[in-house]
Image (cartoon, rainbow, N blue to C red; front, side):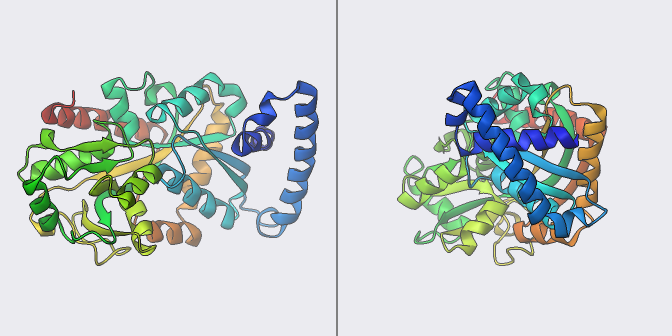
Length: 355
């Protein structure tokens, strides 16, 4: 596992910087990767030697995180938050990250499957959209085509508006929507019928509106959708609460409704949908998957390091900062959870007319 992780992190650094290195002559690529191997070894020894190598609780040398969407979205935040907790706590020596957008997440999934043996050092983050897109047929793969490592967190959903918007609550938003539904679009970082759309539809249906009348505008990633909100292209954004909190603290948005049953300590001023008379709650799981065919010992090591992460102060700081809920479902428990969600989400999507 250790050697595989080190080699994969080095190779992945080429991908993270850009694919130009891959396109060069093989001899040049081999030479460059050799230099990077030496540099990476030196950095690992010097940079991580004090906190990680001197600490007997380190489980893995490194993990490369594959994010199937752009920077700034919920997947990105989950991967980087997890990597932060694992490295700072000393459970792993190093973490690297790669954003691979496209195909509603299908590009990254296909890449991981098609290059399985060279990516045993990689964990891919995903969430409820993996189930939704499998149901709609938007992607040809499902969670059954991957190695299930563990579900790790739950993230409530939220509706936000731009900081300068005259809308300050769901009551204000519904008034604007009722006056001009087509002119009050809701955006999200997922395709029509995807997670952000489903959440927006659930909220509007619970508010007594026809979910199928919602003018939903899709974007490929949360960061792109946020840009559309700030430009005025959309009037509200359906997103994960952790992203909403970050954007709110940066002074870019106002949170007008959260799908939690009660207010979340990480954002105590943000009202829930329930307290505004909209009887709906929802939590989106996020977790990690590995390449198919991952050796059992490597899977056990990943599951071990994630389990130990929950007991660290570093993880609690990351979790609390993002307003996440701990949902730990390793291995077979994760599969049972996903099988059940596939049934529940499928029933909901049929009810809303998405299937």
